[in-house]
Image (cartoon, rainbow, N blue to C red; front, side, top):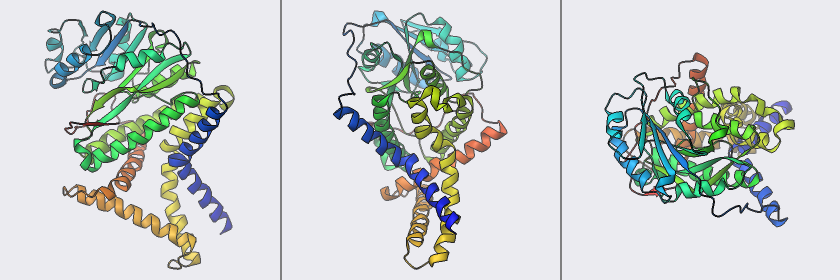
Length: 402
């Protein structure tokens, strides 16, 4: 029984560390560094204003392209220094032809549909600027996004800059919208601290940029292109920085079914990424980056979801040993888990009936996140997760939240 207690407490610690503990550790490290004067922002040349390429891969995006092109042309950056490149491989809804009606837009199209990463690999060869900014077709960028991204590239040690993903808040009264919005608020704070410590651990695909010379062709079956691309930049000796003032806005998933579909793909890609980036487990070579990578990403995609499942029977045995209704520590923890997952399942039940209680959003979304890891792992093992675009349906929003 003593061995079981040790395993239980270690498991509980890892779970806590994965979701909250790492954030606490980061916060304390950052505070100490600031007190010691070690957190000094890089200034650089304020006149730095290089040419950039806005790079969009699009599959059947005719409903979004007018807004996207006009949004890109309205950004606060000299338009003679901005090139728009769209790669529309496989699109058969008229997207390529419609794009040709816009001045300053270069369109590269192939009838064959091979997936997003194949389009990126093919399209980057046409980029002639020192910085390439990747963005999704269905997202709007904040007016100062290019300028805010470029500002961080003044530092020659920066190889990649991640913008912030923001969620329109009109659907925040749904579990998908509220859960996704709260999750990204927390993730944004962790990214700020990660960047201040050393490097962000992966960029947001909705908006990120790299030095074009650092591009490495990515395997054609890659699921999380943004994650692999940015981490390989970091592994080459540069850092990934984060600027929340450069942001992309999109609506939340239309419902939790759509959000689950998106997260299953991300989870399958996360497992794939852990395998492909296994060199990052070498703490002696990558040091702080390895610490951040394992703490912020690897645990959430691998060990923690497994432990969340295993601590339930462990907790039950320990609670039975001291008395299931004794109000002892293990019984309180067990019934706390029962209450949490009951709330999650109740949230699922009510959401499917369009009845929404905000108090249930967090346990519901947390449950969906970890369920997606199991489903994503199954897809990865079976090898049936397609690399082709499989867009989740999005809701409709009016006001953005970080």
